[in-house]
Amino acid sequence: MSAPVISVSGLGKRYFLSHQRRADTLRDSLARRFRRLLGQAAPGGGDTEEFWALRDVSFDVHQGDVVGIIGRNGAGKSTLLKILSRITEPTTGTVRLRGRIASLLEVGTGFHPELSGRENIYLNGAILGMSRAEIARKFDEIVAFAEVERFLDTQVKHYSSGMYVRLAFAVAAHLEPEILIVDEVLAVGDAAFQKKCLGKMQAVSRTEGRTVLFVSHNLPSIRELCRSAVLLAGGRVQAAGPCPRVLEIYQHGLAHSVATSVPPPPAELLDRAYATGLLVENLAGHACSDFPVGTPWRARVRFHVSRAQRRFGVALGLRSADGTAVQTVWHPPADLAPGDYEVIFTQDRVVLEAGTYTVIIGLSEDDRNLQQFDAARIDCSGENAVGYYPGTAGLGLVLNSMATSLQRL
Image 1: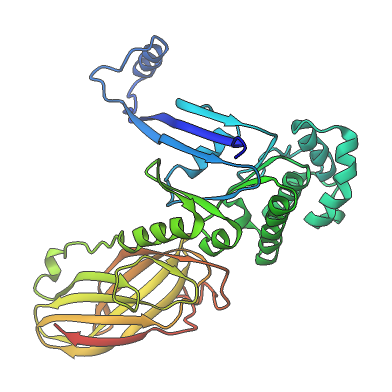
Image 2 (image 1 turned 90 degrees about the horizontal axis):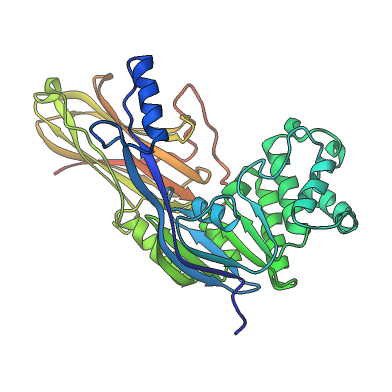
């Protein structure tokens, strides 16, 4: 077998997190800065914390491979790609690269905002070491792929994020790099353009023999595009190998790492009613926090009634990452005797678009709020779904209501 085009061995990246207390006076502030210049710790020490974003990461990638880099937020994916793209230096270990690299790590990477789209195409080509004649030969193909002909001579600082990404990907994919590195930035584009980009990455790997590293939380896209995958967890390689096997390990881990949080009841609710537990699960009854768009899920809300309640209600809401309420469902209010109860909310299919959502639980008595709190997080993966319409009267629009049932425990 030929030598790998990317060889990562014992890679580590260390940062120091500052926990410095705020200086009370100008003298204190200047004294701290002076100690840093001398390499001295602050009095009492402990003002910084060592943090390893990556540790002992090793893997090889061969020519023509399409490798998915997956893992939870904070796993070290972006740090790894920045090291491979030579944006930052590793603390330990080595990286050997054979070939020219084009990277698309975030919106605006490699573009100068004051230059036009046309000028940035030539600038990026020059950075990749291409001659003006080589860039000119690919120019029309880049512009056609990006679909920005009307705005080609407009400064890119006036582009929308979607236009930015379209042009940036077109440049990175068409200027003939041996290695193409693409981070989650493609999520900014619309579904049609994402599909177009996936097709282009497949073409450059299968027909042109180029190597692609692709980071995404969209697991169906990873499964469709990639032949192998690397799973990062806590800055380390948890698994590497054929894509289906690594995805299975990742999804199994998600299913067994569901974090729910039910706060202790306030003192004034102890003799009334309060929530005692929450379980988010699939319809097989397994705890889960990751649901492909279009699959069913269920939430079990448990609560204790200390004294008889009149018209007692339980509500479940979902809020998107930007704070928008996208769904709210109530179980019909009921008169309850003292005891322990559970309300089960079941949704036949996820109608939300791919993303992360916060589960909110609310309890009420006779239409008066008793308790409300953020209780869990769920991740919806897959293509955008029809049926996501945020912001109706602050409660979200429920297009596919969740069925509810109440039982005494």
